[in-house]
Image 1 (cartoon, rainbow, N blue to C red):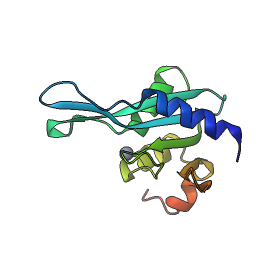
Image 2: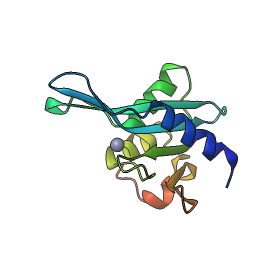
Image 3: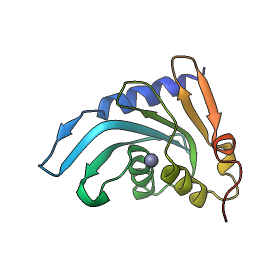
Length: 130
Ligand SMILES: [Zn+2]
């Protein structure tokens, strides 16, 4: 397995920190790292709120990447609440497709770090609705 995945795992672990921010907001249960095409790693944590104002860790990391002037994703890794890596939800997949409609199928996603199982977004989302 490419060592960049280890760097991405460690980057996500470094920000995963479950905490209650207020009676209405919790954060950090899930953490994600995005490898941009330029080779930089961007991280994000999930933020859960009342009334669906929050955000998934993956989209938070993607927004972090966009905030820093990049918009092309190469790899995605998320650490779930059980400490294992897993697939992004439908909303996160949709954002990635809309960001990269012509090339999203090549985005690599770490499905199971322990087993080294990597899947592409094209395999997860073969037919886009638009
Ligand atoms: Zn999501």
